[in-house]
Amino acid sequence: MRRYGKHTDEDDIRSRPNRKGNRPRTNIRPKHEDAAEGMVLTVDRGRLTCLVEDRIVLAMKARELGRKAAIVGDRVALVGDLSGRKDTLARIVRIEERTSVLRRTADDDDPYERVVVANADQLAIVTALADPEPRPRLIDRCLVAAYDGGLEPLLVMTKSDLAPPDKLLELYGDLDIPYVVISREELENGDAAARVREQLDGRVTAFVGHSGVGKTTLVNALVPEDRRRLTGHVNAVTGRGRHTTTSALALPLSGDHGWVIDTPGVRSFGLAHIDPSRVIHAFPDLEPGTEGCPRACSHDEPDCALDQWVAEGHADPARLYSLRRLLATREHKEGD
Image (cartoon, rainbow, N blue to C red; front, side, top):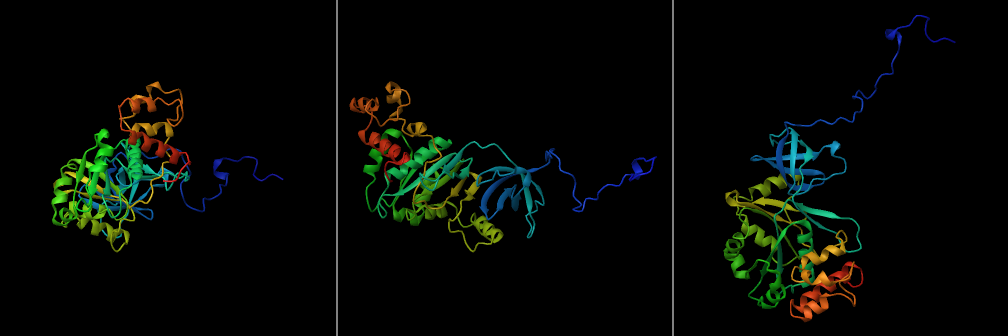
């Protein structure tokens, strides 16, 4: 049975209506050349708080970005309502190329990589000299993550009134890492913030440390009350009552001379995402000694040239011990 007459034209053809009323799919994505530049300050349940010029703007990620996630420190391009007014929402349409990344896993058995901070210049590793006791292997792991991600390390030792820093300074002396030693009194009266600030000006610095070492107290001292208005604004936007370092938060230093990024306290620093062959890069005092190692040396085997290198006095035996403990932990031979 013929459905149409003998002489049909295009006007006679019936088309199925688009019930959703949306446009047909296309692989062509908008370029958003007029998008505004911004920086991600914090992320909370799919909502990203961004700084656009001098305004705090709440945004969500555009679907066209797929599974690519924006994190604290990311430079992004935004469109939509950029006024920052209440109940407005912008859209992040592009994430700019990152200059550095701080990554970690929950532990060495966890294959899920967590990107904590992007585009930081420096990683401030905060450790107490006592109460709680310093954990050198945790510091080593943070150093590995810093070198692997393109960040320069800074060692901040707190509570020097409870214990001297000599042992840690001796352990890391060969690495030529800048450091600051502060006491609890200095932390309370503001002297600590002034001394640490000298290492931060003009840079984006991520702070990491075990719970109880005074990391967030130091960050609060570095960012005066008038600058912490940003924190209050962020909390009002995301719905949190107050910032308790459950997620990373970027805060500007006074005078627009840099940023500090406070991160949640860590109990462990997994390195499942890092190739074991790159771990040696976190030990520049040992790296020259690997030139005589056999191919694909694990640096923990009988033919490893590092034993002779250390025996000849080129590096501290404690550093080789620390490296091998770290490699053993990374290879699931030994717990941290």
